[in-house]
Amino acid sequence: VIARAKGGSILFDEVGDLGEAAQGKIVRMLDAMGDAAPR
Amino acid sequence: MTPHAPEMTTGAFDMDGTVLVADDDRTIRTVLTQALTRAGCKVHATSSLMTLMRWVDEGKGDLVISDVIMPDGNGLEMLPKINENRPGLPVIVISAQNTIMTAIQATEADAYDYLPKPFDLPDLMKRAARALDQKRRATPAPTPAEQPGPAQQEDLPLVGRTPSMQALYRLVARVMNTELPVLITGESGTGKSLIARAIHDFSDRRTLPFVVAAPSDLEGMDGPSR
Image (cartoon, rainbow over the protein chains, first blue to last red):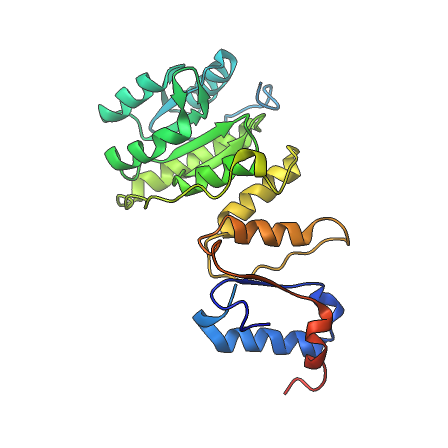
């Protein structure tokens, strides 16, 4: 999913339905990708 | 179209500077002239964009408050010329054309601020005071880059002219070209996905992919976080 959005935007739909652990992973993943992360 | 709460007092504002007001509605000109003068400003008001541009070119004014649709032109189309001739001169755009496109076009044209009509006079005065204060301390702003128009008026993804929608349009315009992640909250069915799509479609990323990750796509991410 992230690869498909490269350079563009990604919508994590209904992210509130995910567990806290998964939400944390998403945040850390985006942080780790820095400027290369989709918005 | 008249400002909200015309009876309110503007004595709380202590402002200094010359304000150029351009609006074809005489009531708006009168209200703004009275309020700004009472606050301590010198005001030049006109119903003509040509007159406004002449004043700008002559070096008059520390702040411009301009309508968009004027008898002799479009105020938004004048913004690049104002920015070119008078870098750092703040322009507050007021408009009854209160769609998301106006908010975005005003932002893209480097307007200092945008207020849909009918506007709240104390709110406008507060923004004018801030603009004058920043102008006093500001260095000249760079000339804005040419930006292509992202969509036609009839293709608007978001509709509505209520104050809450206007606030939303302003937010979309502010974040669309930032690198910031945006958290969109709201009840189911209120249009969160539409907002996300609009932010993408109006941004510089509009030609790049927009991907929706449904919860099912992310199921594998559940579990231990470290």
